[in-house]
Length: 139
Image 1 (cartoon, helix red, strand yellow):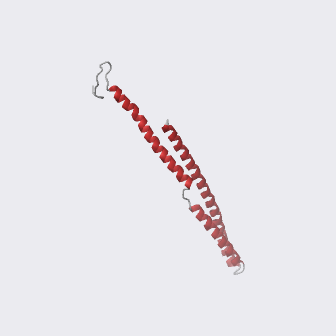
Image 2: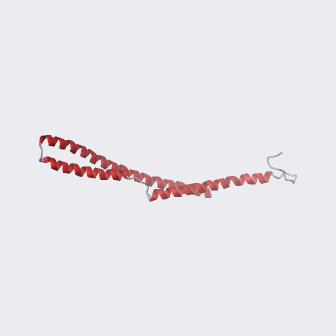
Image 3: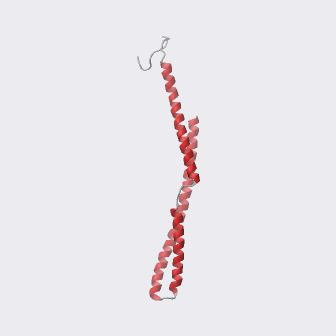
């Protein structure tokens, strides 16, 4: 019975770990999407800047370069946020609990499986009706 409870604990810990990991990956994907949007804006502004540089030599260019620089900084910030992806405390703790529960369940199952084998060996050691002991596995 204890091994079943330990397997339940391991399952709950793994479920908690997976939920935390999915939430982290969701945030990471959102940050990556925002970074991608700003990177596309940077590319569009770079093209617009090149076009304005050819057409209007100096006046609109500084304004476009300021927007280009601001978009580049924003894209870099969101890109760093998307790239930074280490498991949080909840994921690490859930993984530790799952491992401990599974190790304990393995130990309990090994002990539970050994008890019937030992009792069978001990009960087969006596012949029926003869009242004397014999060596198991030998006839």
